[in-house]
Length: 471
View 1: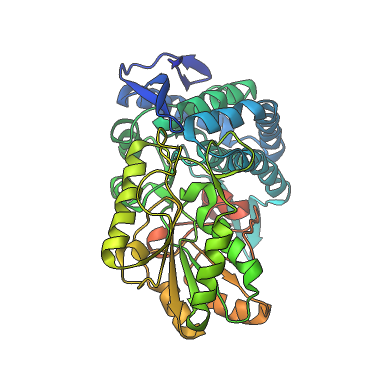
View 2: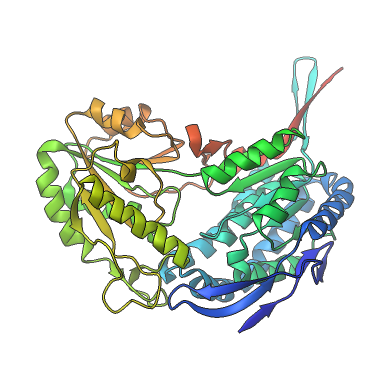
């Protein structure tokens, strides 16, 4: 069992002032695998002070110097790929397939930031005015437990590119992963105080970051409910905020789609990261005349997705992160049954032979009314709702009939038609014919899926302020 005793502040590993320990549980078997000592408000204030002390010098560095630091971080993370992967599988229950993709996402974040910096103009002329873009100040990075280090790296790369110093509050549930990341940050050799990491809970460390006037910017990924609380607290000191929040993404199968291709894509989009993903396409919209065929094919295809030990290469769906999350998903499955949705596959309880861990039977509801709670609320587990529609306009209406707007998916043979449908959907990203990612493209949500955008130059610019100098 591992006992983690340190936070990372001002270039040093320090024992926190906080004395509370948080138990780390392997979700595959619910055995305790470690404990982490949590920081408190005092530790957070020390980290904020260190970041502010380092800000003046770091924000005045040029692009080439920042590129050098980003490359150092990339190399340090690359050297610990195996450790990052094993920590994520053990502590979070991420499948090897997903965890490997997550670690590569960490590396890609630094590579993308370097490419952006090579071309980015921090100063240009507009008529008689010089437009300068300068670092917003000290940034707080608050990340969730699903792909923790991937979120840390994408936000950190953007902040450092802009010249910001940072204080990172990862999820306390991700402490094994965070420990490896802190060691990578230390190895990268950035100036003291540029990057600080404080393990701690949201109501202590997170609250201090949200309220402290020494923080100029907050970037947060997590639930919409917590995002709203952060935005309210941040407003008192007019902090800039980027919030990437919840989702209830639609996957629209158009009437010309090849179902043999669309069904596997739909399941991949629904059950990515075992369904614990804000972008997961948990509403499958199907032409009414094809509903029976889709039901038949999706049950067949679901059998190809193995639920089990996340360490196994062929596992597609692992456990929920905690008993609490398992119970939440079970509650929604029970709710779907009570609401009268047709259970095609799955249901309540553990899959046979997996009773010791937080495993859920991948559950598919069909003939779902979009007004049902299982179609409106973010479940964050392997639960898919199939919703019939009569025509393309109704499909768009159903897709948009949600408080969320993070991601959407479309499957179609006619790309022009799919693109037209995409233009009518209120979502920050729309993928046509497959799960796609472009690290240079903006990522973020409409409506209650968030504020602002991340990735590429869009993410970097969220850490910059504009200054007009009139000559």
